[in-house]
Length: 314
Image 1 (cartoon, rainbow, N blue to C red):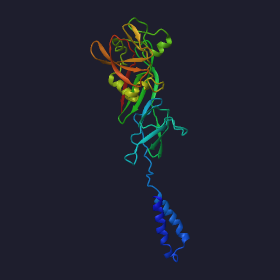
Image 2: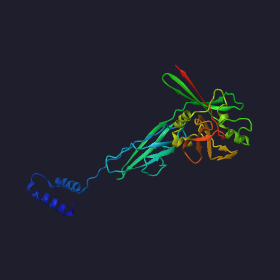
Image 3: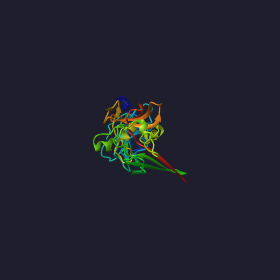
């Protein structure tokens, strides 16, 4: 309301007061007058706050990377835009990420058992909504010695899943397979490297190592990739040093008798062939969160993790 309008309003109001002096005291009228003037001078504002919602795109697991998605958050105004920031460790002491308009953020899940992650959503008029959401993990696994036909022992990790009519034990090698020295495969020089990287072997050797344990198929590797957050994050999560993960290493590959990409890349055979000359392998890298399948010549020497599965029906 302009100053001229306010003057006109006040003049009109007081012009009726002399006619009502007998009915109402001016002291009682004045507060109502001031309130009316203030209300008339205020601009209309939308003071509604945005709604904050977020989910984890995959199952949270300790030290694994996950994507947190706030795309379910919204404002009551169609032309509003939102920004987000996160308290990843849930300590209420600070925000680990600055304001961003990106609705998806990738974080390393910080809780071994359970905890809270905080989110603030801010609209373009500055109103903020805060939400803290609880998460928990419940990994059922055990690590033990694997009994196999191999001369050198390895450990295995058993993941246990219970369903309505059966129980499933999903078993993976917890170490890269090691073999005694031979001209048919490649062993690293030091015992420390052998323990970390295992033996690099051609596909025809890898496919016949044991009568019970086998090379994982592409489908079985894909199940592990899904367990580790999907293809875009599994490359990191397969390497992370968490007890419930496979902790894959990056030995590199032998091609043409030469060790290549050592410490940068890991190639792990699958049980799936392309033809007589080539087969599929899983590839992970030090500089990427992704996992992918690649085709290798069977004469290449790559790493081996074995698997087996047990089903118990009720």
